[in-house]
Amino acid sequence: MLIFPQGPGGGTGFAAPQINPAIAARSALLRLPIPMPEAQIGPPPSVNEWNMAAVGYPLWFWTSDTDTHATTITEQGITLTLTATRRTTRFDLGDGTTLFCGTTTPWGPHIEPGAESPTCGHRYEEPSLPGTYAVTATTVWDVTWSALGQTGTLDFERTGPAVQLPVGELHALRTG
Image (cartoon, rainbow, N blue to C red; front, side, top):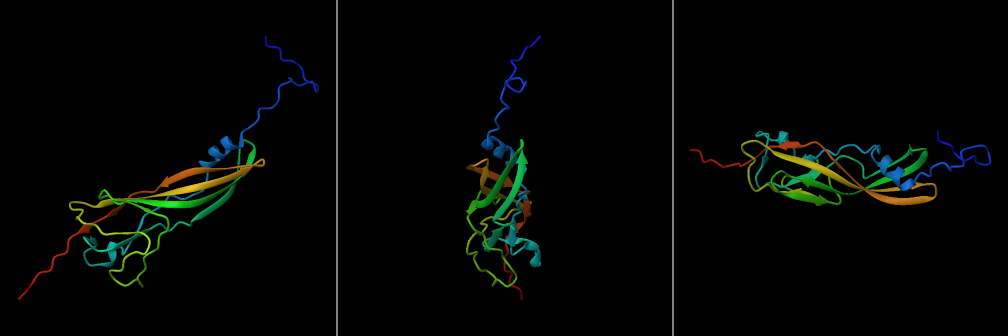
């Protein structure tokens, strides 16, 4: 039989366990509503008659997510305020190249053909044949938290699904 000492109010005399806000913040981080990034590529291969990107042609890379997410989460009985700020986006381009882009600029149809991305671009040097290059985006976040008068910062990464990018060579043919 276990016997616990009686406290002044008739309780067991043991203090309620103290919850560490930093540990609660790490747990809450897993529930932070940051969407998976999806690599966006421009110009998209679908805008040309070959349905592929061309070797040597400048491509733009970006994600459509916002740069900041803020939320309040209750974890282990503690209410935490979390603010995630995007630090960088890492694009693995499938050809051995990795881009780290602090900012990105979306491509649009109003962009002059052949224009370089001002923030995050790449030219493939080899075709993807046979097949495609798998392009993935990983967003890296600085997450600040506050709870019970304490604050801290955590790192967080989220990787999205691969986007398949066909890249081929274009050759001019003389006729006549």
